[in-house]
Length: 260
Image 1 (cartoon, rainbow, N blue to C red):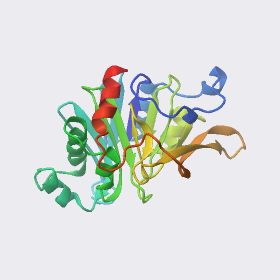
Image 2: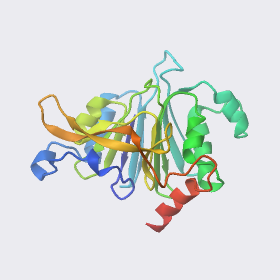
Image 3: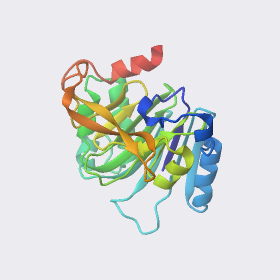
Image 4: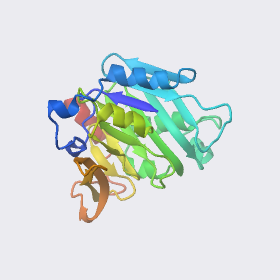
């Protein structure tokens, strides 16, 4: 899976950048067109991609013929909302009933519906909605109409996800560590488990919504200081993070995007 978002759309934590952000340190990084070209050439027979002018790119590798629910990869779009999903949900059937969807609705389409519910109707806190997803999963949602990026990774570690900063400061998200390293040089990190990222609301934990997500320096195999890894800080609290049931919800995040 590959997702690339222009720097004007996604605003990741500043610590994701390598401390050495000089031009010389970034010369080996790639621009979005090169990243996509390399990704597609690595999977010439079963890769699919969509580009949204210079704003975003979404790509994924179609599953092998030997189908597995545990490592499935899905892509779908509805009403200018697009989702790339990896993994599986054990409670998909019950969630489909909860959202009024047909029993044949897949995980990617369910995530789009959950996103639409958060965006348009509320008043559910985003962390509460994501916690309802039971399984191993990672997903990236791009709302083309609102210019919003939303990503999340389950807490069990069953699916891996990485993110980084490309040569032109675009945000790159992928499950392929090789793609991230090639694209982002030293400015990359594992996407933290049990966390969600919103282009307006930033990086937060849906497992521990009251605790801050802390950036910790990352040192590579050569002992060079790179970007940061992100972990929930059990000792610090978010004074502005809404409690479950609060009226502060996705609508507030979405309002941020509309006015900034």
